Image (cartoon, rainbow, N blue to C red; front, side):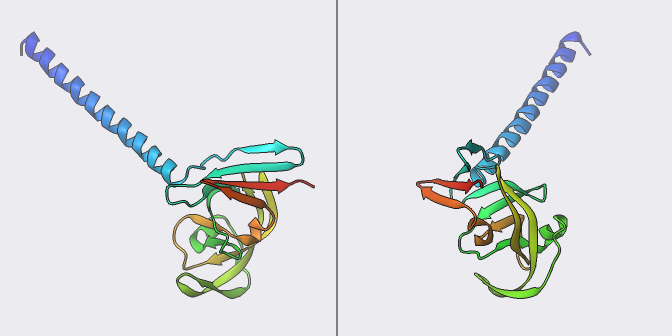
Length: 173
């Protein structure tokens, strides 16, 4: 092999590595961009002062409000749902969060009547908004990793919607 041929092979190898690197970079970029489109509130910021905590959420392209938060110190994703009476947790996720299933009950959902289990969330957090001992339901028929943030939590918070923003306010005692 001549020195010229070796240089050409090295050049082809470097070009291949550059293309592979570019494809990997684009994959990560567009993957993060897509996640941001679905949940633009992955790190919600809080304004704290004057006796209140305020969190402003952006609606996603489907006009839903998703936001990351915490249940008992573990990160979760909430879907705000004023039509849900309780905070509703998919059964698979409830097991991971170590929520204790309590009394059996029934709930009417978009898919009809389902059997649920009552539970209590010791600590629910969204940004700096913090709630204790929140009534919740474990729904074995619910799929996915999103928790419906229903009225058992939202009744403790003032919320207003303007355009594509939802402002949550918790007044401190």
